[in-house]
Image 1 (cartoon, rainbow, N blue to C red):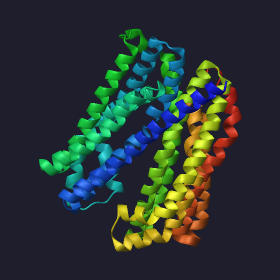
Image 2 (cartoon, rainbow, N blue to C red; image 1 turned 120 degrees about the vertical axis):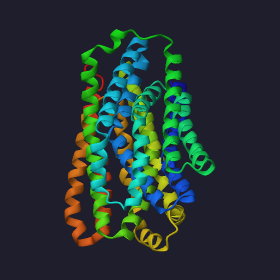
Image 3 (spheres, helix red, strand yellow; image 1 turned 180 degrees about the vertical axis):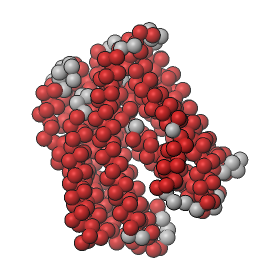
Image 4 (tube, rainbow, N blue to C red; image 1 turned 60 degrees about the horizontal axis):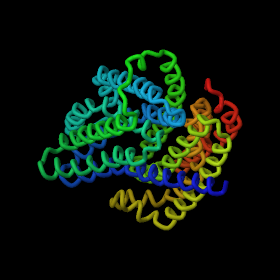
Length: 439
């Protein structure tokens, strides 16, 4: 038994390190786009690309449940070892992804108009956003299909394939940014086409590894089961509602920040970038937990689920302590990496103390939800986030009028602490319902 436990621990750690590495490369894309445009273009181009990136990141973040939901179901299917079941999951999930992508393409003009009403830009920046948006919008089917393909590969524990798909695509995107903008002087078109080509590469890599893993051609009947669609919609529906809660909190935070002036808004944005990087590390832990939890319920192994719980807790604790110490020691260097504007840097340092609390407040909430997505018991993920949002709004009403930006950061941290606190009481519910085959 000790050797089995040791093997489990090593497998968990190996998967975790791979997923963490893959997760933390994602923020590098935004940094690379900004750095390239900042080096080779003027302020209007930087602003235009930045706003365009916000439009698409918000849109795709809202649909990120496609990957999260598929990961857990794929892990369960991996234990069942049913190629036709795997194809059924893939085809139904891809159909759902293409449905959302088609909706985005049909509504591309209204979506752009709505974004421009929210983000008031000067005419020079609007011209840049139009060029960037009109190219990148056609990559929507690739992005959403990649969510499904990556989620399936992660659930199957195909680590090398997942890394080649995600990390390889990110690296290719950065290289093409430099080549198209710096070498060929394509400007904003170069940044947009770099993203589209990188997404096409990831899609091809994902399809290649999936067909190699399954080794069969699916029957068309795999895509004709309404019960599979119902289950996917139910699971993803809870995650979609959870994402709406996250977007409400994020928009309230940034809108309130803008009310404190440009300098404070910029300082808060810099601090949030650091928090998002920490969140990506936690996401790697959550992805690992999701896979192992899915395997546990599919095999009916309650002992495996308990072991995964222990590993997740200790890794979360270790990472939490490590990131907190890293922030305490190097916070000034982190802030300087994102900006060298003296006024913004000074303002960010004034509020930097709040960042030191983030790893602790967010730890359980950003890792524990992997148990629920892995077992497809997703209702608690939505309800816990909704409760955290309600607390955030309450603290926002009370603290912001009295303490200004400090009050806003108190509300921000309370939201993440609430996600951690409100998810914990659902463990027994997960333990009961996760092993029910009809859930």
